[in-house]
Image 1 (tube, rainbow, N blue to C red):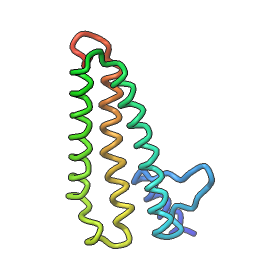
Image 2 (image 1 turned 180 degrees about the vertical axis):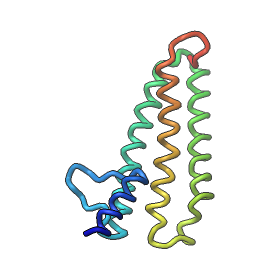
Image 3 (image 1 turned 45 degrees about the horizontal axis):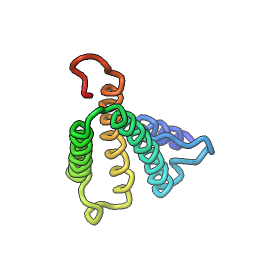
Image 4 (image 1 turned 135 degrees about the vertical axis):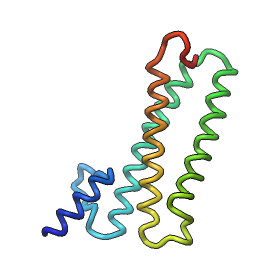
Length: 128
């Protein structure tokens, strides 16, 4: 029981939350991978919402295209950076999905903050 609590504490420190359905996120590697994947999916949904909010605010086709281009390049960067940090799937073991999902989620959280800052800023000098 003590090791189970330590393991759960480590997962929570890594930012892996368990769902409200009381899923046992540290039962085994597959469960940890699944929980990390769910966490990333939730952050990715938040990213899409923040991106659409900023895109809808922009007033010209040129600015919209600039944001779209930036977002595509950011996604390519995020994916390449996580591959650098975590390695390729074929070179990883059973922990690779967990590490990959954690990296993607952390990078995505940073981008969500950026997009939300754009959306919150409606003064001179903010992206329009």
